[in-house]
Image (cartoon, rainbow, N blue to C red):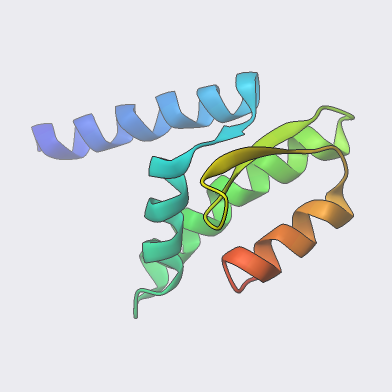
Length: 95
């Protein structure tokens, strides 16, 4: 039961970090990539939920930074269309 509470707390903190700072770093990139390619709805739903927070920031007129696995650097994204293109290119999704 403690593990579930720890997981919930970790997710709440992650949500707050995404909404405050808008940074999808290397660690989160690989977590999302793994979750989106997992053969179960729960991890996919988790990943889509995190991606929607980045989308929310963009729709509110805030920029985000996302990890580019080709350059291994962060890339600034300032609009939803560019985020969709990034997701399609690097996560093979339009979630």
